Image (cartoon, rainbow, N blue to C red; front, side):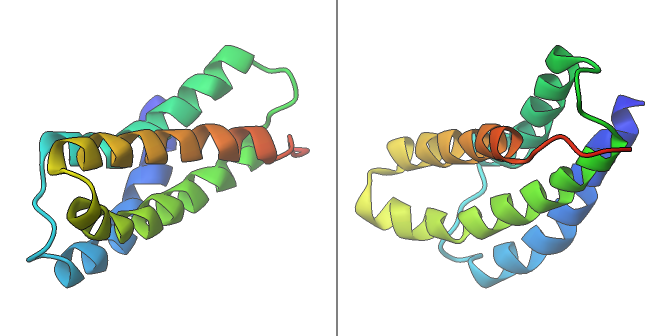
Length: 115
C-alpha cells in the first residue's frame, strides 16, 4: 500500500522535475544527496501520516503528495543559484534540508480532510 502512496509523490515529481533538470542541466550536477532531496520529502510525509495513525487524516489528504512534488521541483530551481553563492558541499545539504522541511511544513499547515 505504501508503494501507491509514494507513487503519488514520485510520478508528479518526475513529470515536473524533468523540465527543471533539462533547463538547468549545465548548472546542476546530480549527486546522490540531490536525488535523496527529491525522494525523501515524500517518505517523511508518509512517515508523519503513519505516526499520526488514524487520528483525523484520511485518504483525501493524499492530495498533498502531488503538491509536495511541485514544491520540490520549484525549490530545485534555486539549487544552481545557491551553488554559486554557497560552497557546493553546503548547498547540496541545504537543498536536502529545505525540501524535507517543506514536507513537514506542508504536513503541519494542511488540515485533516474528511473522507
